[in-house]
Amino acid sequence: MTMRGRGPRRGKALSQIGILRDGAILVRDGRITAVGPANKIEKLKESKRAEKVDVGGRVVLPGLVDSHTHLIHAASRAEEYELKIRGMSYEEIAKKGGGILNSVKKLRLSTSEELKSRARGLLEKFAEYGTTTVEAKSGYGLDVTSELRILSLHKELDAEQPLEIVSTFLGAHVVPAEFRGKDGGTREYLEILTKQLIPEIADNGLAEYCDVFCERGAFTLSESRRVLEAGQAHGLTPRMHAEQLSNTGATELGVELGAASCDHLEYLTPAGIRAISKSDTVAALLPGCDFHLGLKQYAAARALIEAGAIVALATDFNPGTSPTLSMPMVLSLACTQLRMTPAEAITAATVNAAHSLRRGERIGSIEVGKQADLAVFEVADYREIPYYFGVNNCWMTMKRGEIVYLRV
Ligand SMILES: [Zn+2]
Image (cartoon, rainbow, N blue to C red):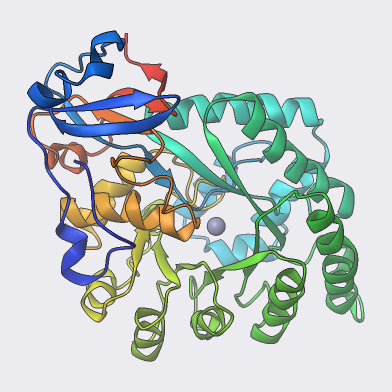
């Protein structure tokens, strides 16, 4: 599946996956230098000297791009999982100091070494499922030291292990406990974010993006605007957690600010669908959340595709609402719950996700000049990738021409 073609895919173009049978890919210095039928590629002069990797007729696709994760966290929240099953809602748990604040408490008590070694283990797992690029958000620190610590870990992990980490600052995840219920507490916390943290993050190149959780119980529309505009003033591109549990108008704000993506969108209105579909802001859908929370409010993927939105898919890997790092599982959910076809889902998880990270020129398809980021699945037909739900058929993962995972 070459996914060849120009720019992000909208509407019918989501189904154009550029199938090449009996293909071969020539790679030099981590980049693709030729793609085509194997009998042609093998005759190229440079191929004679190349090391050959025979994938034995398996299905090759671009490395999966996970454009929304909360990679750095200290522990699972399995205890809340049980409460949810017994009938408590995510918001009720959050009000009792659970939810995000629970993860914040755990993270602040962890050393950087502990967080890093956990994240390294997780990144190895991401690679096992065919993912080669991972966006990672801060947001479980929520104080100056802890947020900077998380963002520095993103940078260190990007340099020290093979997967690419795209760093996003999510200081505006929720208002931390020490500012809650305090007069002017939210205002005070926003001052720290906009006047202290954002400038420092920008000066040290610790993040490319600034994200906000715009939701009741988190940040209002005008507070979100303040944070995102402060980020923009310092060169951080906006992304948003938008319309997850209610409709806030976050999507329209994201579009207005030229956000790279608005994610979730379970409660997007028809007006919101029109707004994002006419824009270059990517609509990233995260069906793992609804699945894990047992909700039935999946995003309106079909309406978004028909309106021409750039639809992407991501895991939203996090300990509270979506503890999966399996993009193939997300593809299965996209097919059965969002009614996306396997071709549309794979396009959303590669080309369009790459565009949401503003890396569309470099990753997301198998084309000359792009990075040799590949995922090889042990299936006879690409549709079997989402078809076998909860089964990992990834056989090999390659990042910049290096094998980073091979099933033994
Ligand atoms: Zn999220």
